[in-house]
Length: 234
Image 1: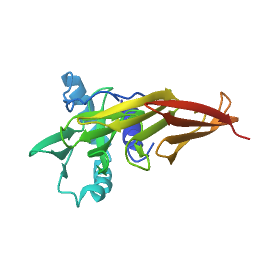
Image 2: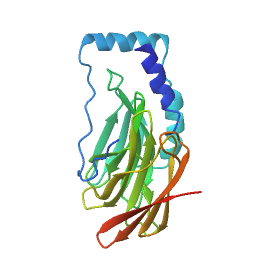
Image 3: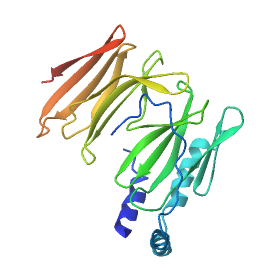
Image 4: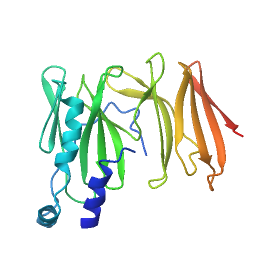
């Protein structure tokens, strides 16, 4: 357990699957220990190797200090919701599903706050919808199209077996996927780039089982659907 905690808080300072793309969101999870043994394990670890909370929170504060809709107090991140309501995200140190939150920024285009949620050996990005306060989890950060009508994410994570790409558009109460698919990550990252409001490319320079292929996938919007064309690069 000690090794897990060291790895967990190390991952917090290293910026990088599944998507709940057609979900309107879920309420914040509740953090509670399953039993007293979990409390004692956390207490023993924290007394010998305190987590790097202060450093993480100091870096995070530079991103919300001028935003009156966001505030952190110790392990709790508070985010304002329309109508005077509030979403409270509480870090959870207990068990194998431990997690903590790092605020990123407010996204004007999607009307949501972007929060990075960090787990042991994994992470995802949580959209906190300003209108409803609901949470929507995505495996990668949003990359907006030139017309700001939709965004894409692409994630290559060999450790967690992720090779996902999706194009989504905001809706009245969440987001909706126009396409969810996979990309030829291989042994490297795939870089996303919008060529136009209706064309997205994913360039994967280490595709294949040995990482020795170079591929580019172009996604083109045709009516209400997206078509994909794969090109092998020289």
